[in-house]
Amino acid sequence: MSSRRPSQTPADILLRIQELAAEASADPIEDQHVVSKVVLRRFVGVDGEGDGLLYPFRLGYPNARHRLLGPDGCGKIKNFVAYASASAERLWKETEDKLPDALAAMDDGTLLGSPEHLATVKDAIALHYARSEATRIVHVRIFTQAAAASRNLWLTDWRPRLEAAFYQAKGFYAVGDQALGRFLDEMMQPNLERAASGKLFRARIEDIYLKARAFVSSSGLEVLTSGSSEFLIGDVPALSIPRDGTGLGALGGTALGDARTVIMPLGPRHLVALARTSISAELTPDQVASANAYQARGALEYVYFRPGSGLEHFVRFVMQSNDPVDLGA
Image 1 (cartoon, rainbow, N blue to C red):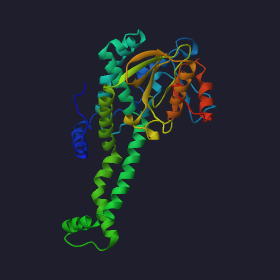
Image 2: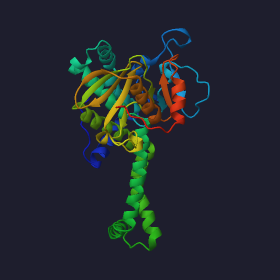
Image 3: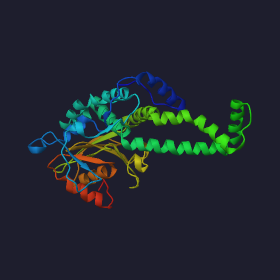
Image 4: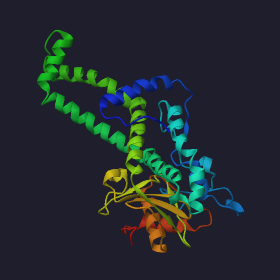
């Protein structure tokens, strides 16, 4: 497992970007899974036309006919990490290579008795929390807001410092707001370039993963089974559940540390959730439906499930309903 530690300051992030420059020339990986294939394989059909395939339900087209696909064609985003992507894939692979054995332990009921496999499943939750399109959207949103706020501060509260920097760089005083604004844009350009090129996101997603991994390592884990029902999985599978019922997932404003729990399906029969203590339990059909509703509402574009499960009817109903869901129901 990587020995890197989470960044503590913006300077640490800049240093990491400089370190990654050596990796940037490696062959880029375009098709990048944000849902691990080893997890998606657990949702494939086992017979008939759906053998080895998943049902990829596109949420924006609920009444369309959805073509079944294999795990290779699902849960991926082209150039998700655009900079030094090969090094990011190597980092994810450290956890993903351990997942088959951990999932086998979950299937045979020995997961909670194995610290090694338990740690792997927790790492997988952290990985999918960080490596998601929701995380990237939040990253872009925060950067855009911070850049605009910073520019405004430099032109108002910090204007004397900006004027002094202008004089030091140019040897004369700025005349008017336009000159100061252009100078400020020149100062901000390197950071804007780091954001536009994907360098900043590459460093940030690694940092988010390492911090999430450290956070979940001390948590308990509930291993929940579906009884006679089945789980589905969304394209944002490690989903933070708010304490007050509003703001689902990171995109809804529920950060990892603010969540009541984080849930992640690991197959039609299994879902794991962060908790104070580690237990195994079987959910009622209503609780399975609540977990599936969370996944559907927290997804951005797709949910995936076993062909023949009939869950397409459930997803259509959920996306047309505004009824609240509660995993504890």
